[in-house]
Amino acid sequence: MRDLRGKIALITGAASGIGLGIARACVDAGMRVVMTDVREPILREAASALRASGADVLATQLDVSDRKAWASAAERICAEVGEVDLLCSNAGVNFVGATHEATYEDWDFALGVNVGGAINAVRTFVPRMVARKIRGHVVITSSVSGLFTNGGAGVYVTSKFALVGLAESLRADLRRHEIGVSVVCPGPVKSQLFESTAAVRPSRLKETGSVPIVPAGTARESTPIYITAPTGEETGRRVIEGVRRNAFYIMTHPEIRPVLEARSAALLAALPDEPVERGRVDASAGLLDASLYK
Ligand SMILES: NC(=O)c1ccc[n+]([C@@H]2O[C@H](COP(=O)([O-])OP(=O)(O)OC[C@H]3O[C@@H](n4cnc5c(N)ncnc54)[C@H](O)[C@@H]3O)[C@@H](O)[C@H]2O)c1
Image (tube, rainbow, N blue to C red; front, side):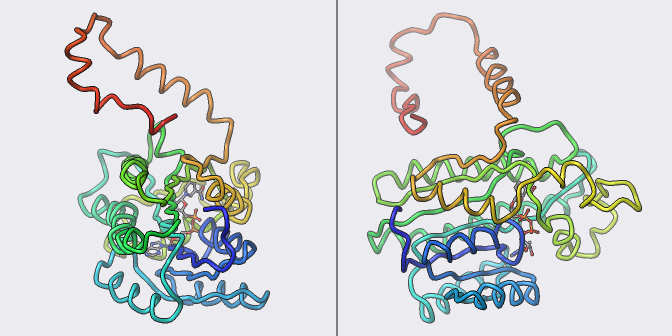
């Protein structure tokens, strides 16, 4: 999707951080923007700030895990603004804690927002995009946590791996339409992820899944990981640059290379070192098509 001017973007989780950065970059590209988020007052403030700089922005509250709300939001957005050309499924919640200690409710909550939210976005808007035969694009925000892990965030990691699978499948399925798909896999970005997760997590889940990552009395803003992280705006600009060139994976942190290499090497090393009959290779030729990744 090269020419973005005048096109309509819908972004979930747009009140702060990466979603707000994507909204800003869309505005800078001349797009009309629909910003959605579950945190209404913060969403409205963010949208007003963008409007003050002359942007064409609609802000509407949407809990991405609520399927009925998606249906009515779609009707409202299409009636008030128009059909969506760029769909950015970005809303997410964090999880910090040992995988085996997460409760069923922790799993249901985080997967409901992170994975369920993206499924709802795709289910609501992609068939409409296909039916219109447009040159559209879908962006799904995963994370480096969708590519590798070193423990301590199993629920989050599971959800983010699922989003990479969702995005790759969608990219393959939409190849014959003129709709591109990108999956964003950022490393640490300056955002409100810990604060927003604390705000939206049901209070009955207080005791699990939100272990503080910095010692009591330490401001997260003073940690090296936060200080050195890119901003939501910088990340948003990368996303829109990736949309323009239909990038499959949109990355932010080249320093993850050794980990990606180690993981890829581990996967390849695990393949049985044994001959495979030609007939077996031919029988699964369709499954072995690697063209999506080239
Ligand atoms: N900040 C990072 O370091 C980082 C790194 C990799 C990936 N991500 C991902 O980026 C995305 C954006 O997060 P961020 O870091 O900008 O944090 P953020 O808190 O600034 O933005 C996330 C937004 O999602 C919203 N949200 C939460 N639950 C929602 C729901 N049910 N419905 C609608 N909106 C909801 C929050 O209100 C918040 O505004 C998330 O998917 C996150 O997992 C963040």
